[in-house]
Length: 86
Image 1: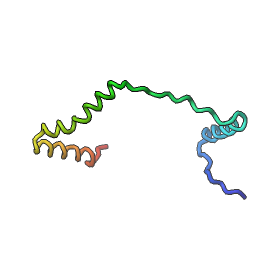
Image 2: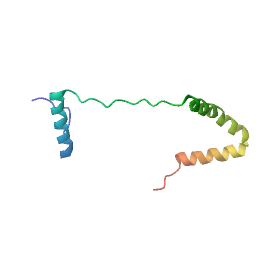
Image 3: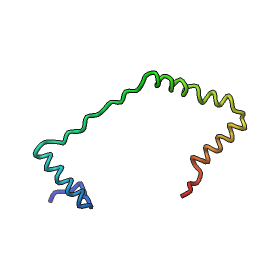
Image 4: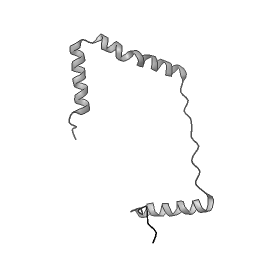
């Protein structure tokens, strides 16, 4: 008896789709993937965003006092690792 590597889907709709997909593959071949669209970015906007991103953190850190930096870091840590309200 052959081993079954896949478990059948639990939902009848999934099983029906699986049967139809197999039937289509046997009769027409594998279904064609939709053509991928390449998104083109505006080079000027990319350069401007990179320019601001490169100096943003350093400029902000230089403008803040050590106490302000510490408070900002504590707030960020609480937001990242603090308890989540549900």
